[in-house]
Length: 125
Image 1 (cartoon, rainbow, N blue to C red):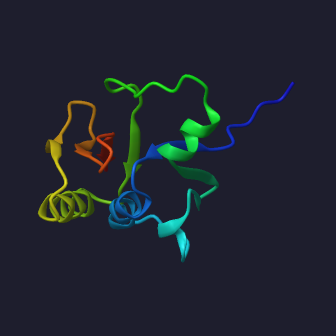
Image 2 (tube, one colour):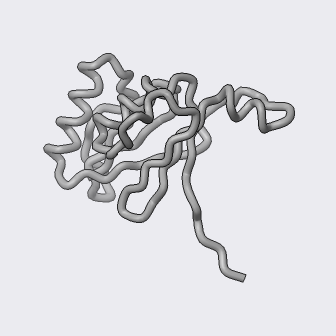
């Protein structure tokens, strides 16, 4: 048996609001995606998908709103300066910074910001 990761998906309350955040991170979101209920963004062979919560609720029986932080989504930047600049842009736009950029003992520049649906998004360089 062979298994391959097909995609990573997150559930969002408002598609445009979510996609605007991820555009600032540098994802190439397809034209016309802001009103869709499902959006795939492929980047370097990885499919990152967005699904509207209302659509997911119609498929999942017994949907329960998630509680807590269960997954890390980490986005790699080419330099410390690029990471710092994106973090600054996002916080200036009003997104909540969870952990300001800092150098870690393991040698990465690291920050965490909350996306519009309160997912913790790691920024690394």
